[in-house]
Image 1 (tube, rainbow, N blue to C red):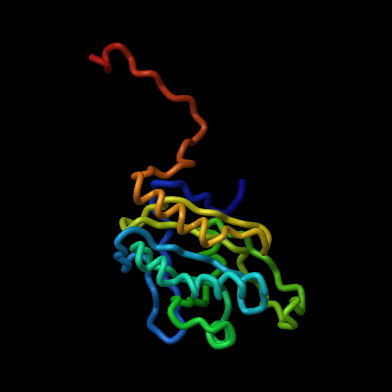
Image 2 (cartoon, rainbow, N blue to C red):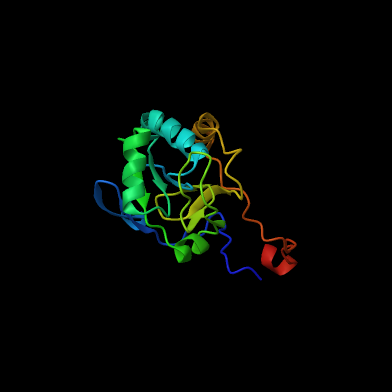
Length: 193
């Protein structure tokens, strides 16, 4: 049995308390968005795929805000690496968080990787880091949906995510993936009366 969590739509997500670049600690339970919090977990400063994704997220930050979505990006990087990320990648609007622990990553069901020396960006990989994931969390702290990956590439396109949020909000879509695999129980005649 895996020691990692498997988050289920409609159920509460784990607590999340992380430090932010240039700001105070960030707590998920303190967030009161109109519609969702988008929690994006990224690998860190060493990852060129993360750089592309976070730059795109920064460029679309206002698009998410207009839809009532608070957005943040979280890594297991140190403060120094997260500060470099903000400067080198031009992150100004996006809340950039760092210091995610292994226990927090496991609670969110994230995949972990060990550092293997120099990355393709010519930077030393940290001792451990998380593989990418993205979660939409409702204002009440329950999971609407998410995607967890084992590899750095083939991430969701942010325009697709924005389209999905529009569709959810316009059509009142309920979360999917909540079925536990057990057969449905037919109501008895007594219960139907």
